[in-house]
Image 1 (cartoon, rainbow, N blue to C red):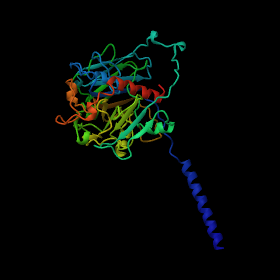
Image 2: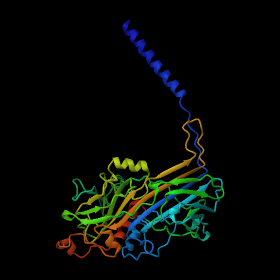
Image 3: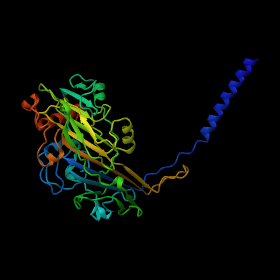
Image 4: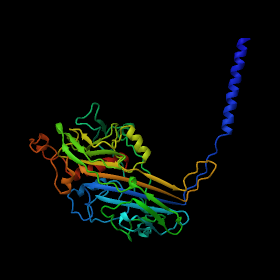
Length: 440
């Protein structure tokens, strides 16, 4: 009898639990109706330093030729859209784009800016498509036979004067499986779409307004967008967190045993830092393409996706995972013995600013009230330094290179050898390897 009573009690409890779950499902809070904003604007702000084009009014830089590997290039200094992309020329660049659903064919708009920007107002225009530039189906891309790349890739990571145990991770291109390639090319990335050029997006800079961002310009203060179909209340204020970041003051000095010590001055609005290098490996032999990668991350990562704008949640998560360096960190050592002295290595470092996402009116806390924003805004900020590993940034800007070892130290056996590859060869090999890996 007692066992029957216990069984009945258990069954009753199960029924009660099921009824409670059913009732909870029936009383689940309604999902809020969210509509896209009537107007959307994007503002990308980037500061670049190191090789590439000199800042406005500067002299030609002999290191400019190396900048093309990361998107920079030599030529006359001028302002144009999309210069905030990865590897832009040295200087300050701002890209602005706008869209309004009330006038999808908007051809012209205006952004009033605070006095500190020294430009009064920006004229945004839509670029007209060039009929001559269109590709017909008959002129499409012809698929070329794919040849498996040869050579080896080496991956190192972490700030240390010596190579850590268990490194490098080696990828033999001739025999690597898809899983091995995926493991080697672990590349964190949370870059969202920012300012972009499309037929329905008036943007700045452009052919009609290609003014350079003045020296000491500031975005702090009140901004406003106007144009046919743009909400009249599209006004917002940017604070210091979204202002133009200073250049990364990257300094390189030789450390014990041949390591390279990277040091920089902490930037007041930096959310975190990350550094990565790519170049010919030390002791390279043979004719096959070989490349070495290094990053400041405590976890294996080539860094190919991190030297770009990233979202705030992603930066915060990667800081906890020690993929990125904390804002208080101002030094990091590149281990000795990774890159050959004759081959050189390209070094990139990024200071992440804080992304800003605004919408008006704000999202209602009551889920029963639909959210129908009139406008939304995304602002992204970063500061990136490009350099050759072992060369002091200030010396590069003067057209000279600081020694990668103490002046009184005798030249190493590696240094006495004739350089194994020129910068052009490394650049060509690096591009070819990456194209072969990704089938481009």
